[in-house]
Length: 182
Length: 105
Image (cartoon, rainbow over all chains, first blue to last red; front, side, top):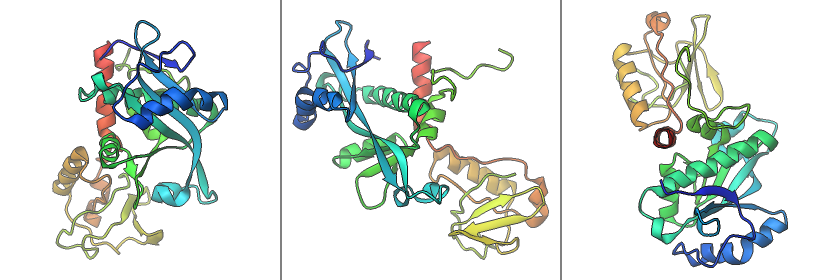
C-alpha cells in the first residue's frame, strides 16, 4: 500500500499535478471539486502524499436517493417508502502512476469507510454509483456492487459495506474482530 | 432456522423445477416457500436432498455463483437441519478489507 493520508480536499492540495488518464475526472478535480464543496453539493476526499500537497487519488461523495424499484427485493422491505436515502460515489480516480497495481481496491475501502462513517451521522441506506463505461462497471461489480438492470447504475447496502469492512455500528472505527476471550 | 436462500437447481423430485423461491424454516416445524411475495404453505415444494445438497449449497455460496439459495430438504428432515447457509453479500470486499487490516497490522 502506498503511503498516504486520507484528507478532505482543501486549498493546500496541488490539483494541477494530478493526472488520472481521464480528462473529465482530472478536470472535475481541478475546476469543480472545490466549487461543488463550497456550494455544499458534495465532498471530495483525497489521498494526500506525505508532502501534504500531492494528490494521489480522490473521490467525491454526495447525498442522493434511489428509487425503491432500482434496488429490487431489498427495497421492498420498506414498503411505505418510494425512495431510499443513499450516498452517491460521484467521482473516483487514482493517479495514473498508481493504476493497474490493485491500489484501487484499497481506495474503494476508504470510500466505503467514509460512507459508513457518514451513515452513522446522518443515515443513508444505500451506496450508489453510476459507472461511466463497461470497464468501470466491471470494476464495481468486482467489488460486490449489484447492478440495477438496464443501465450503468450499481448499488450496495450501506450495512453490507459496514459488515464487509468490519466497522462497528457505534463508533465507525475500523476494528478487527477480537478473538474469543480477548 | 435455516437462512433464506434461493433455489437455483432443478434437482429431480422438485415440483418447483428450478424456480426461484425462498424457504424459511420456523420453530413450528413448518416450511414456508414464498415466491413473488406469495406465501405458500408447506408441501408446495417437494423437499429433497439433505446434507449432500447442503454441501453443494455451501460450496456455491462460497464461490458466490449465486447469492442465495433455497435449501430444499425432506420434510422429515426439517428438524435435523441445523446448518445455516448464509451467502456473504460482499465476499470479495470482505477479503480486501481483511488483507488490508493484515497489511496494516
